[in-house]
Length: 187
Image (cartoon, rainbow, N blue to C red; front, side, top):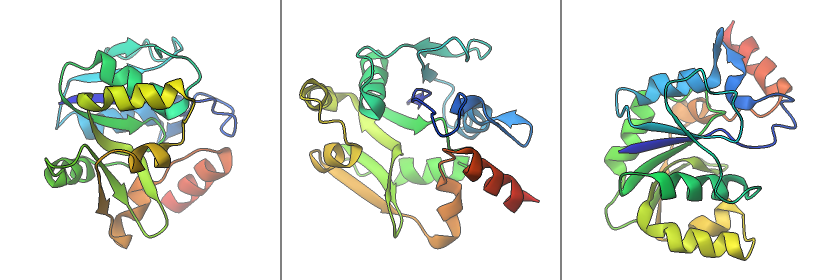
């Protein structure tokens, strides 16, 4: 299985490259890679900067610039060597191998996309996406329909429920305030 970590984004609320923000003295991206490695070493980073060059994984630039997560997923799938792909964002430092295995094990073959859902929201950037959805992705990008939820509703998708006990593992850290809260809860 190809794993693609989306390292793009404007990071305006974090005011620095999100994947390189330190949590427990280690960049977010390294926490995510640690969670992924027991599953697959076939990892690529979708990034438009050289900031991740210190990592020994393939880096690919967005094929179509400024199209948000959908553009990142499109790029990841175009460059993927496998039909099924695990797509992750770079701002989920608490993600675990167990959660990722749960996603893979629960992915129904009669669905295209599988993502997690809790009471409040869907987590589209911890998901399984097949190469065969590339035409649908390209069409959404071409008409500038870039909302993740709308895209997911337009493909055969599966929402895997998250128990309340696991909700924190899915936390996106998008701002300095959220990072401070994460570090406070740790101590």
